[in-house]
Length: 271
Ligand code: KIV
Image (tube, rainbow, N blue to C red):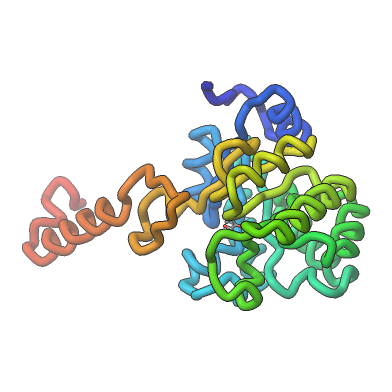
């Protein structure tokens, strides 16, 4: 199916309509102006300013250290690069759990200061109050269930979630709750394909998967992973569409050699 680039701006209504007509939703992470511009011009539907910036941009081991100010900085850069995509900004760890007033303050800061179009937060019934409060301010929310990296120290590993019946049932209940509260979409991360299918079929809002199989309404990947910038990260669900690590290494190696050999700049490259 070709990309509908004639759509002026993607909205939550258009994402909903895509689910209804069976058009898959494409989503990628972006953290800076240049990449956001390229992805937007290619026709991506949703750009996620993910807290995975903590890993791939800042080099942290987990997503926990990134701050609200840092997320807003990344989101501002992405928003400046887009014309068409819907931009979702991750609420960082510590900015919404436990206290719904603080959650609303954080979400308002993201919307006001970054110009993003919606926010994403991790969890189900345990963060219900924060979700209700943020939605009451008219801010679109994308939920995130399954493997929720902000809870990595509770899980202990990044392995597939909800393989057992109890956790699978809780995930379905949480997904239904998020829809009932008014979330416009949900990301399901690293769960069995059949469970994701069940959720996508039961819910009317778009379900976006990462490591959740093909039966959901759209897919998201971390840009650095699908572009092959990270060599070490090789989960089964990841498809690499480029090997930028090799391309960039070769380019930089050649540049260094040209500088050392006095080959760059040549006469045509000088004033
Ligand atoms: O932060 C992120 O990149 C994410 C995706 C993995 C969905 O939340």
